Length: 171
Image (tube, rainbow, N blue to C red; front, side, top):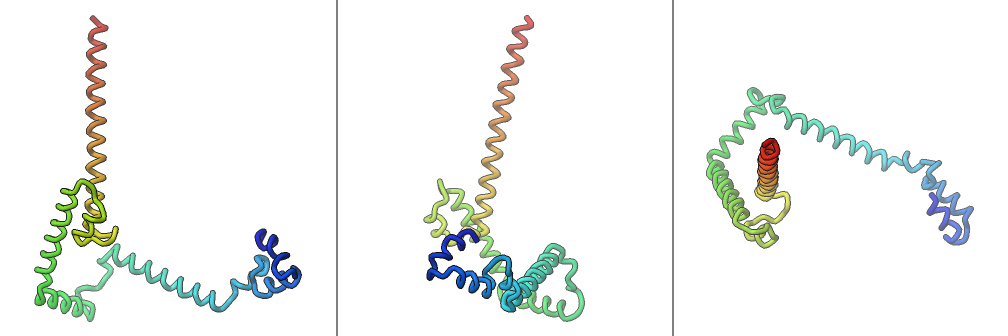
């Protein structure tokens, strides 16, 4: 609102009409007419439905035992999908993808730095690729372990020096 107060006098040089027009359109914060607009209310309903759907999907993915997979139409559809995948090389395809993933991970391990060239040469075109994320998480864990190992070694060296000094002082 302070910005509007600064520019309303300059806009067409008719401040009273500008304030009336803003109030009539619901742009003035005390009026809040814009919040009662049918278009905005429709969008709110759509967003609420999407949020409820997402929450339901998350609860089902978090607890798959809630799904009926043993009887009825859902079980028939799942059996059909599984049979189709078995018949049409799904197992071989999965094995091939796992092998490719292992090759990508190995090439990331061999690289000095993960650059865009290394990523593209291995078919990784986005930063959300599971092999890239797995490699980065593993690298971070290894780096943290290395730092922890160095700290432990340094601490044990210091304790050894302190014990030698305290032994020499006692004599």
